[in-house]
Amino acid sequence: MLSATVKQCSIWLFLATSFSPASAGLSSTSGSLGYPAREIAGVSVIDTPLVRAAEDYAINHSSHAVYKHVMRSWLYGVLMINANETLLNNVDLQIHAVSTLLHDLGWYRGNSSIISPDRRFEVDGAIAARDFIQSHEDGKDWDERRVQLVWDAIALHTERSIAYFKELDVQVVSKGIQLDFSGPANGVAEDDYLAVTQAFPKDDLKDSVNNTFIWLCETKPATTYDTWMQPWGDNHVEGYSADGKRRYDIIFKNLNP
Ligand SMILES: *[C@@H]1O[C@H](CO)[C@@H](O)[C@H](O)[C@H]1NC(C)=O
Ligand SMILES: *[C@@H]1O[C@H](CO)[C@@H](O)[C@H](O)[C@H]1NC(C)=O
Ligand SMILES: *[C@@H]1O[C@H](CO)[C@@H](O)[C@H](O)[C@H]1NC(C)=O
Ligand SMILES: *[C@@H]1O[C@H](CO)[C@@H](O)[C@H](O)[C@H]1NC(C)=O
Image 1 (tube, rainbow, N blue to C red):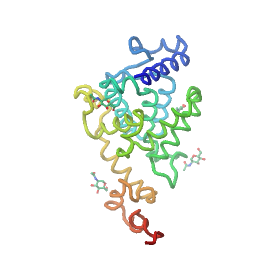
Image 2: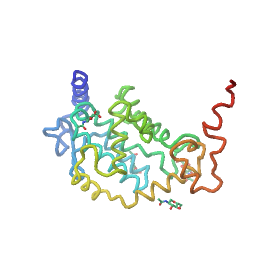
Image 3: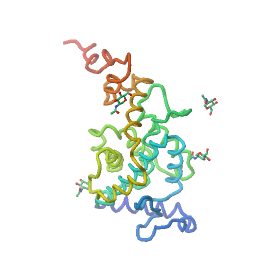
Image 4: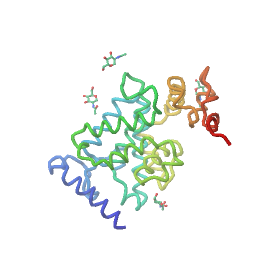
């Protein structure tokens, strides 16, 4: 309980020192929430220059389908946090927002230095998000732990068997994104969920996901062998073969009895 209180306090302090009354006054719905907020699809979200810039950055480095996916994931995550007092008291809403908005930068097919030839897309996204925070005027004030939580949340968002056992900030990013695939769960009401889906329609998610994983298996297959992405390569990419490259194939190579 103590740590919850301290954490809550640090959010308040952070906001108190980061906003002039004038800039806080721009928010429409701060009132009882205690932080500057705006409403999107009926959901009150934290509204800071850094979070706005993260959304802009996502728009600039995503297809429209992916932009809508990250927005839904953010809003579902906020609904999930609001439905659970432990999460509400402990999750840093800026870490949640920035991580979720930037979690799929590694999917961007434009001319971008974000995409590496040799790292998993989650790691490309984590590195780009860290660079984004550290180059933003307000992000420069973030301590290393907060930046690291964003990095971890993005790098691990697809590895639920790990992410769900990390810090709550890391867990909720992964779980919020998962809600875009599972439908309403984790305390999120169906009506609230539908309002988000109506504001950011999901019609293009399936093809976007399918085409992206095929593209990743085509363009950097070594980052997909032995991962959950491998089946897209096995099933849809000509010449793709993980044989001889899986841990199963090589782990005993140098181990003698
Ligand atoms: C997004 O792109 C616009 C137009 O190129 C640019 O003005 C803006 O600074 C970019 N924002 C971010 C956060 O990258
Ligand atoms: C609230 O979230 C915490 C942390 O994830 C979890 O342990 C707890 O079971 C949740 N409570 C409910 C009612 O879902
Ligand atoms: C990619 O961007 C760089 C710098 O922004 C530019 O020099 C290069 O010509 C661009 N390449 C393509 C294929 O658009
Ligand atoms: C994914 O794309 C491949 C290749 O175009 C296609 O054969 C497959 O049916 C698609 N899968 C889904 C679920 O749409």
